[in-house]
Picture 1 (cartoon, protein in one colour):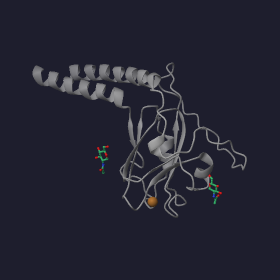
Picture 2 (tube, rainbow, N blue to C red):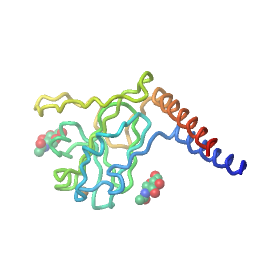
Picture 3 (cartoon, protein in one colour):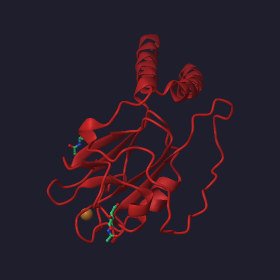
Picture 4 (spheres, helix red, strand yellow):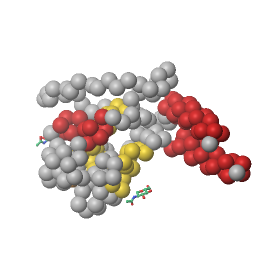
Length: 191
Ligand SMILES: *[C@@H]1O[C@H](CO)[C@@H](O)[C@H](O)[C@H]1NC(C)=O
Ligand SMILES: *[C@@H]1O[C@H](CO)[C@@H](O)[C@H](O)[C@H]1NC(C)=O
Ligand SMILES: [Cu+2]
């Protein structure tokens, strides 16, 4: 009995501490995935997520029948995939968040974005003081013709510049995981 508890505990510790360096993995649309005909509201899907630097966004869909393109805010609003930051088309694409801000993804297949296949990933700035940040939705910006130019060059994914490592976020994630593991220790001890 003691041995099995110890084994269980070790597995839990491995599970908890492996997660520290990996960040969270979010599959867009959950089990339904990335689609234009699944009646998925990607806005509400993303609105209750707390995306952080170091997290991964996974897009799963049928290859050759869809794709994922990262676009500007303006082109996200108008479903315009003419110019993109990056295009993904493997059917199982992972986008690793390397900095805070908004990341706008649409499908460039005709009609798909218009059918709601677009998602705005809003990544909060790492904060060390508050482990559970309160949701503060940004007011919707009125579409204007004089929007600011993108802050980074629009390039294919293969030539994207490396971003600085997310030390602040990892630290916070670490403390959360530490508390979580302490809770698990208590639970395991009681059971
Ligand atoms: C799509 O966006 C590009 C640049 O981002 C622009 O040149 C083009 O006019 C836009 N197309 C439409 C139909 O708005
Ligand atoms: C997608 O890729 C991940 C690893 O990158 C893998 O774990 C997962 O099973 C893949 N999903 C499909 C449907 O191939
Ligand atoms: Cu689609």
